[in-house]
Image 1 (cartoon, rainbow, N blue to C red):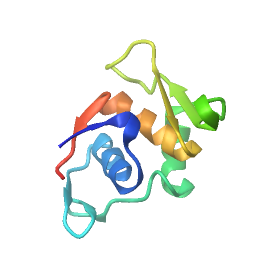
Image 2: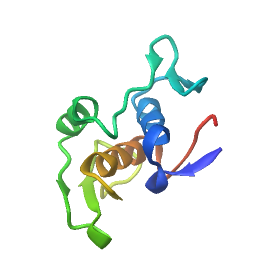
Image 3: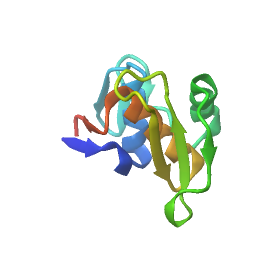
Length: 112
C-alpha cells in the first residue's frame, strides 16, 4: 500500500524508518524487522530516533505551520538536491519523516 511520507505516524512511521535504514520489515502482530524482532519506536523515544538526528545533523525547530515542529536538512540524499522540510506533532515525528523522505521519497510502499 502506498503512503505519503508527510502523513506517516506511530508504528507505520517507525516501520518506514526501519525500512529507510535498510532493514527488511514485515507485519505480523505488529511491525517486525527480519531476524531482529520488533521495529524500534524511533518516532517516540529519543534513545532510538536521537542517534539518527545526531548522525544526519538535521536542525529541528517549532516554527512549522499551526505550531507543528519542523525538521529540515539535506540528509545526504540523492533524491532531492535542496534538502527536505517535514513537519510533525513532535520533534521526533518531524525528524523521522524527514529521514524517511530523504531515503525513500515523498511516497513509499509499505507491506500492509
